[in-house]
Amino acid sequence: MKILITGSKGFIGKNLVAELYNIKEGKVKHKGLLSAISILEFGRNTDPELLDVYCKEADFVFHLAGVNRPKEQSEFMEENYGFTSKILSLLKKHNNTCPVMISSSIQAELDNPYGKSKKAGEDLLINYSKETGAKVLIYRFPNVFGKWCKPNYNSAVATFCHNIAHGLPIQVNDSNVVLTLVYIDDVIQELVNALVDETNQQGSYCKVAVEHSIKLGEIVALIESFKESRSSLQVPNLSEALTKKLYSTYLSYLPEDQFSYPLKMNADDRGSFTEFLKSSDRGQVSINISKPGITKGNHWHHTKNEKFLVVSGKGAIRFRRVDEPSEVIEYIVSGEKLEVLDIPVGYTHNIENMGDTDMVTVMWVNEIFDPERPDTYFDKV
Image 1 (cartoon, helix red, strand yellow):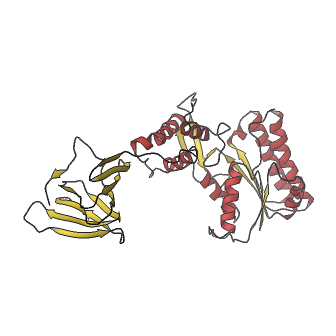
Image 2: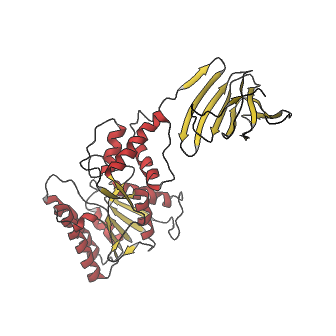
Image 3: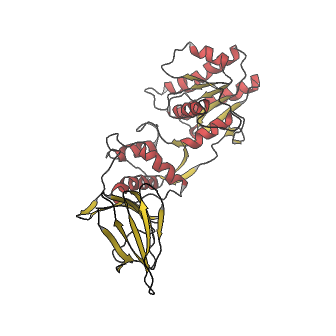
């Protein structure tokens, strides 16, 4: 199966090409789509004569090429209509009636130069289908966002992510404007499905199955919270689908010299304790380092519960039930055998480094530490 992709170096094109190569190389399996595919990329820097060859050989065409920020308004029609016309003419020249998908826009319904050029391209495709019998797929995309989208171009999300990540100002004219968004991975899933005739067809047009609606001001607030999370250590609520997608998108715009960020190590002669991640509903994760011979803890909790995982060194974790006389329970732990210990409520507990090197323990607790209600009571094991 030979797949022609115009605009292969654009935002959607790059993501589609990457996923098709994943399928081709067997890294991703897709129901009904075999790895025996050939990807014909056509972009601005491709030899123009190859377009004729590709239109002759193609078994499916993804027409993603187009302009939305030209220097002259006349370029809208020249590129979005003219180039579409050229592709269809070449397909007809070779009697190639393979399916053709075109990337249009919800602005095709609007009376502006960009929208008019997109609508003209749609009409071309509809007439081409009537004339040749070829299957055509017209996608009127709303605002598409995700990795590799060019900032300060035509995507508010890309601009906000880039500028906030780089400490640059942003401009919001009306924070109450509601945007309809589609995530690039959902777009690519829809396009790959189209190759095996599984499209989300609604009337004359196709749509991405998953859409999100959100106010512009809410997008900005979320992205700003992503930046602040490095200092607050608060992980976003990733159970919310749009938040998860926006957070992944934001991270793709981080400056390459700022992938890392420091944590506050509370260190003394016993070792150190460092908070790593916090979540309002999933508690927090910290890293505890104990020096050889050091014992930490000797406290218990009413409701707060923890999990300990020693990842380096060796030691012992001990427990004693506090409401009645009981024997001390001991678990030997080591980085050589990773196992998680639950720390039940009502048991005073400690952890001792019994080795010759630092012992490193990953500690999870079910709630973020509240100094007003620490729920921690000293009682030697």
